[in-house]
Length: 386
Image (cartoon, rainbow, N blue to C red; front, top):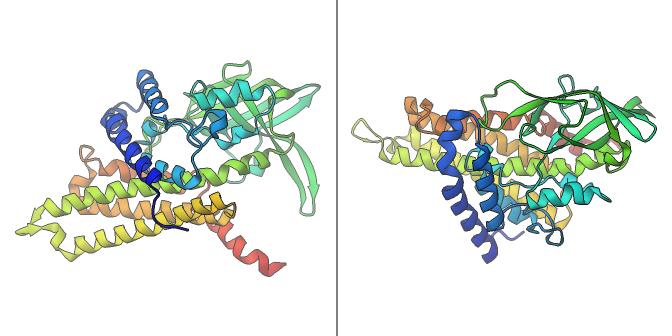
């Protein structure tokens, strides 16, 4: 891969960084204080993002999206990652899952999502089925040309704001060499339909203003036309999304770590102790050196995975390595940033504690660090077992 950015990519980075600094960062304190993004602020950010050409940048131009390649998308997400997750999430990338829409689903769901008229959320996780998706208990039972849905989903991000849900439910069982296993089907579910209740979930310490919810399905009836993809092939649909999502998480962690390093560096260069700036002490300067090195390494992993995606050669382990290293790097970098700030690092007014607090969830959602290590190790061992 070429390590230099094209002129177009450099202009994109400058434009999106300017957007983040002028349209998003000024509202960080408000979101932290109120734990919400006002509806009128969501509308304002969305309108300006659409006008700037940043909305749905991952979707093809022929469908009305930005048509960016994966490297350019990664650079864009890195810059968005520098600010509050609740704010930059408004600058939406509709899920790649929606590319599986067909027939009138395209006009009802895909195109409105690209235009910013409708927003989706994804419902996989359950109280007893987090990383182990095959153990999900939410069931979709076919009755004629309808499905009856019963079960509960939790930790469903953005469900309070979304207009519709991409739901994954167990729809049957199949026999395999390792025994019986559940088959999964994905559905498009409009909020407000009978049999669906959306509840606010417990309060999280990470990403204030970006809420997770609980979805309760009680004899919720869906026509078969609401299947996204093919019946019993929900994992095929999910796999088109998971890799891209893990890469997004990784690159946003790089952007957040870069901001933490910038804040810590400025503090170390100006904070006086014992007659000199604390940056002159090796205990501080070496931390900065380690932080910068780890950020650079994570960024190379991320860009390599994005470049491979554009070449059509990316493997699951490429995304897993990027997410694993970038999320754990962010934890170390933000922790060091707090240490460099000392007691002030834990004060809300400074902002470092938010980066540190927000970093914790990144090693959990979209596949825990343990899941990423499993993916990587299986890729290494599987060829030796054949």
